[in-house]
Length: 105
Image (cartoon, rainbow, N blue to C red; front, side, top):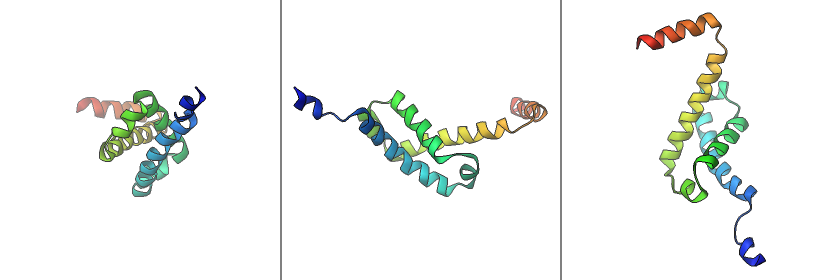
């Protein structure tokens, strides 16, 4: 019976599979984009995206995501986090102006 369980990776090993794949993409995107470098903490964003992907996809489904699709998803997540950080730096008056500009579009 122990032999069967030893064939399955431990939870920490499964998390590392997600983390390694995501970290490679995050590191590449961070290197290519100065805005990400200024706004995001690499370790925090890797942890957040890893957690999100673990919640959304089984390990098998995660491994089936094409590299270009995963890069797109990771990039979108990073862009949203960067925008969230940018908006948190604005004053209430600046936020109102931003909301007005967005509403006009």
